[in-house]
Image (cartoon, rainbow, N blue to C red; front, side):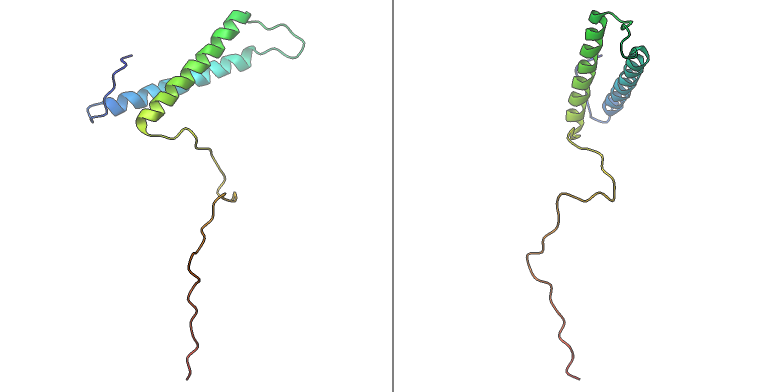
Length: 106
């Protein structure tokens, strides 16, 4: 894949989006392989230690590239999902007291 990417509306954004999709699929497939080959406690692992290290390295490379693509797209990597009914950490503080209505003298 080319290191130089353009976002000038001539397919650059589509290439970045496609690369993000490919990385997401690679990560999911790799995670499935790890899940399927992880032995029950007390059993020997079917993969060699060097293979497991390679898998860890590959997860790291995928994460690095995803972070680079997110940075190029201006996407924050610090965002976390939350529930809509979850209390927010910030709140609005009124600096001016609300105006109260004076009762009519009628």
